[in-house]
Image: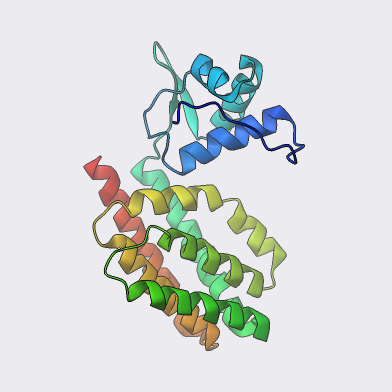
Length: 225
């Protein structure tokens, strides 16, 4: 976690407790705070220039969601999902995401298909470079965002949004394996092309394969930590 104090943007009018909660959660999701790492209230209060009350409120909220846990004689630490929990979440994702991708292939508007084509072209441009770009993970979320909207199912999108923070954490950890980041983007490109071409059955199959590969990469990366 950076040592410099955080300066909240003037235009952000949300309550301090929500800002603190969002800040800590994103630090966990992005891997700034690692699994098992202690979160010290006093240090966070100094860094965020707030009292310890909103820190405690944020940590209590995060603990109720499973992002942190309180251990005897150690305090608050970042949680690590068990292999069983990882398999459970990927199983749910396998059903929900493959359904969303299939619906998107069937229902995508011309505008949505153009957005996908733009992202595909950007991925192709990155593939032509010798070095792997760390922005690949942004393509992951850009593609999912376009496809989930193209599915035109607000309830399905809402369910997937509920898992979005877990998805971001999985991406961060899984990409630590050599070669997985590029391979994942190749898989995303295939999925995006199938949606673009309206190939509903193909995109459903590709999504399930991608999520199975992602699950294996995540579990392998955790095993190496």
